[in-house]
Each structure stands twice: as C-alpha cells, then as structure tokens.
Length: 146
Length: 299
Image 1 (cartoon, one colour):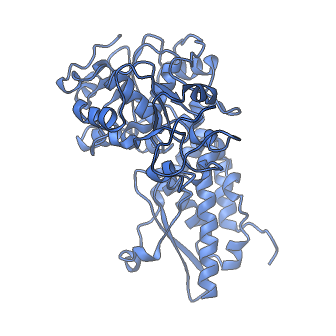
Image 2 (cartoon, rainbow over the protein chains, first blue to last red; image 1 turned 180 degrees about the vertical axis):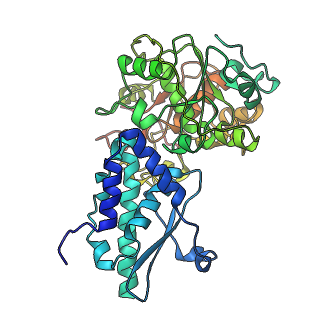
Image 3 (cartoon, rainbow over the protein chains, first blue to last red; image 1 turned 90 degrees about the vertical axis):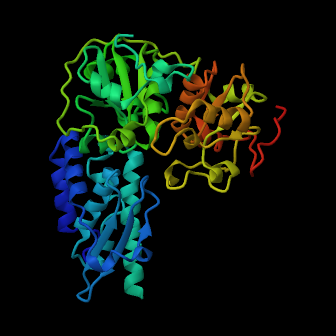
C-alpha cells in the first residue's frame, strides 16, 4: 500500500475529462453513459442483490462483486432517461474494474469533484457520483468481511 | 404573439389556452421564423441524447441559477443567455422537458420573472412527444446570436420570499411536496437527500397537494374539471384567493404555479422558491408536523 495512490484507470479517466472544454466534457460523460453495459445474464433476475443509490436523483442500482482472484467488479442499472446518472455509474464501474479491494479503498472520496464536471453538471448533481463511490466501497467491505 | 397560438380544442377550457401548445402544433411549426424551442430537464445530459430538431438547451442549475448567491441570474446574464440561444424579446418561446415538464415549468417561471412576453409549454413534454413517435435529433442546434435587451427582473408579482410568506399566513398556501416531506417524516424528497433541511414538516395551514396530481399519466395537464376537483374541492381554493405555492427549492411548485395561474386562472399566485430548504432551516419560524395543516399561528 502506498496510501492514497489513485489507481491508473481512475487517473486516466480524470486526465481524459480535464483535457476537454466544458461542453466536450458533457459529450464524454454521454459516451460513458452509452457504455454502461447490460447486466450479465447471471444477475438479471436478481434485483434483490442490488442497492439503490439514493444520492442520485434517478433510480440507479448497484451490485459489487469480489471474485475468486480478489478482483472487484461493479454492475449497475439506471434508466435511459437518466443519462447523467448512467454516466456516473459507468465512470465508477470502469474505474474500479479489476482492481483489488485495497486499491478501491485508496480512491479519494472527493474523486468525483476532481473530474472537472462540477461546473458542467453543477455541484449538486455531482454528489450523486460521490454517493455511488461511497456505497461501492461499503459493499466491497461487506463482501470481503463475509 | 409572434407566432399564432395553438387553437387545439382541448386547451380552450383553460383560463389561458395560449400558454400551451400540442406536439402536433409544434411539429407543424418547427422552423417558423420567430419561434424558438427550448428544452429544460432535470437530467443535464438528456438533451444530448436527442432533442426536438432545432431546440436549444437551457439548464436550470448551470444557466438560470446565480453561480454564487442563492438567486436567479440578473438581467445582463439573462440577456446574454437568451441572445446566445437566438431568442429576442419578441420571440415566441416554447419550453418542454422531462418529468411532466417539471423543470420546463420552472424555466418558464424564470422567463416570467423577466417578463418575457410570449413563453409557452409543450403539453406533455418529452414523454408525450416520444409516445407520439415524433422526431428527435442529436444534431447540435446552432442558433445565430441575437440581441436580447437587459431587463431588470421583476420578482414581486410571482415570487414570494420568507418575509412575504410570514405576512401571508392566513391566506392559502399549497405544499406540493410528497406526503412524507409534508408530514415531516422526511426532511428531503425521496432520493434527493442533498437538498435537505434541518427540520421536517410544513408551513402552518398549508394544504398538501403533491404537484404531480396535476399531470396525467402521459405527462400532459389534467382536464379542467379534474384540476378543479383537486385544487378547489380538495384544497379549498376559492375565486379571488391569493395563493403561495412551495416545495423544496421552488421547482415542483413552479409546475403548480403554472397550473393555478394559467389553467385555473387564479390571479396573484406566487412561488416561494426558498421553500422548505429555507423554511425548514430558519431559526424560530413556525412549523407543523403530521398530516393536519394546522392552525394559522399568531405572530
């Protein structure tokens, strides 16, 4: 552990956003939104596993998995009428894909505020992504404690 | 009026049928000179996923709110915003959006603070437009900038501040939030915890009429007789009443303000945009918890 080391994937996402002007950042967020994958077959009929992220204005549900190799995966559903929320979920899901739990815990809580999106989408809305990250970490803690 | 009003018969029963247009009318008038269509949504990216051809976007957070103090933008910023969107003072503006036009009504209310002469809502907003299979495009709209005059905002006729509400007690108040917020069980709307207040409940004597009661399943406004049942029979409003509506930050109550003013024809309706995020955090203002409106306090 090297303390608060931002994992490479999260750092790359941030770099990509910060390289753009405000309008283009929204377009990139939309691309993330469109990239949010469908749930894998094995989770499709298990709404019970998913936790609602109430910090988001639109219904988004997440489920965190820690596989046998101790790698993290996040699955999320959000309606297509809520592209911002989908985009937030997609950023977090792509950022923590395949990381170890320790690497995820090292992601700073204020990471969502560092993407340069605050001005583009407003501080109030960005809190939805903070809630997603927070809940993702908590679920991982629960999985590895189980 | 720059562009003719929608003569659709379903609007004629309302007090101000000129404030609404149907999807059919709008589709037929897209591209008309003097008409600008504005999309205003809760979700800041929804416009980018597809919008009515030629429509421009105005976001309530990033465009209409002052970035520093809790207020709306002032005349110069409004002039620039509208001018950049190709809207001049004599332009007919039609606003539409997601969630039964909740945010669209809010934008319309802000336009009205500046006295924009002709601003209307697309009845049913995005949901109805989509359900009717009408077109969207992802092609960016590129309006030619025009001059919009710097207009000083005139808040008093349609906007109430906390002091106005205190002075208004004894007159009708409509609380348009969810029942859980009204009773004080929650200090914020379900799923909006960041817009909370320190205390839960409602302003004494306020009647509870959640805003969405005014919208039908397809997002359009309910017929006049249904609205009368909700607001006159249900909430006890009478002709001549001066009404203040509030919610949590003034957006849902903009929808109710629109209904009371333009559909039912009440005069002097004001929106208290400080709403519960202010009232529920102010020291020593009276609050009532539970389902009963409660008595008018003596102050």
